[in-house]
Image 1 (cartoon, rainbow, N blue to C red):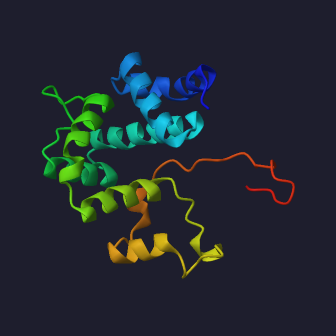
Image 2 (image 1 turned 120 degrees about the vertical axis):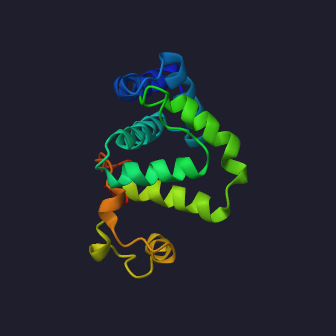
Length: 171
């Protein structure tokens, strides 16, 4: 079960970047709470929300290939990322508008958006991975023609070693 302390810690993790991107405390709390209800992890949700905001912020940088791709994706959906003054709209408003169009997306579009988000935080140690050449993520990249991993640069998250199980350490 998620406590108010968990939500508070999650807000501490995401509030600065959310505020910089024009999100109110109420909007940030609503987005984080909704994500926590699904993931049951305030830490993962706050890191994910921070990543979403960081990726949307890349649309302000005309030299960012990720920003250009996101502008194209959202533009194709009829979703404006910027307001009339050229500033980034609040993440809350963008995601709220996306949620109304999500069911109208093709499976292909949904999978591409999900793949792009997964790759943005992926460590890319595929050559040394035990699943190499037998990996669903590699298969999806081949299926979608993704061969330029720099296109998906994002935040690589460092996780603490999990020693909670007596038979293994997950790092």
